[in-house]
Image (cartoon, rainbow, N blue to C red):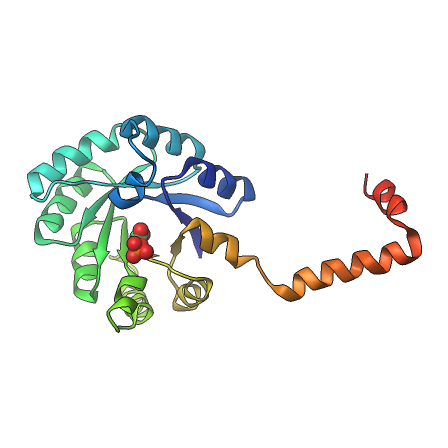
Length: 226
Ligand code: G3P
């Protein structure tokens, strides 16, 4: 499973890329608005120059032709732009048109297997089931990811759409997305930071240092390390 960062924050993206584990970014209008009153085009272009893979940016139009016009414009900003199109009927039509033109679509706000099937049939490159938002209303978001992955696997020759587990809220979601076979999880920065955390690792590092220092002294350790 690959990891994308679900943010529009440039510093967080730089850090994720520096770690070598982040290969894409997903944004949405809510995430972009957290960055303040920015120059949207320049901001997206900056993110695209930092990230070695797809950068999803969402259209705001509600009708298919408006989505297509907006998507063409956004897709021209950088080679790695992917256009997020919502899982509506208008979105299916726009996805089909854009896919024919070679514009990559991330079919977003997906909450059912049927929406994911239509995304694949229309030619979307990615589909984004929103795990956390289904959990929020008492459903099982990860079950949807599993079901989409299983259905797509039945048609390996015709369905190439990749599943992005989105609306990830905590590290357990990442584990379950990987177990479900999602090709990608897009995670908030805070979840990325949590993924490495384990109290026994911290205790272990501290204990190794204490044991070493008792015998060798801290100056010896510093000279050995440098
Ligand atoms: O990738 C989708 C994500 O941005 C939505 O997350 O936490 O707002 O449901 P959330």
